[in-house]
Length: 107
Image (cartoon, rainbow, N blue to C red; front, side, top):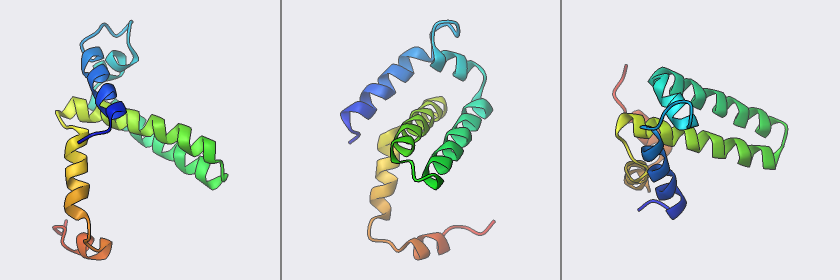
């Protein structure tokens, strides 16, 4: 089950997705579509990497928070939940990363 802060964020995001874009960042981002939401995840991921390369621990924490927030916005847009992510991680527990990757369908 998701951490209480994640549950609260999921609830706030769900509520704000239907707000007016002028009144909510989540509503504005959601109104721009999934591609823009995904782009924000990419931007925040890159900013996290940059902070890591600078050995900036507080920056990594701050950018990671932005990354997780935007990931939750994407999940809401797609009808997914943090609990589904946790279930996937749980299913992978004890499986070698090399074995897990090898089991994926070839593209």
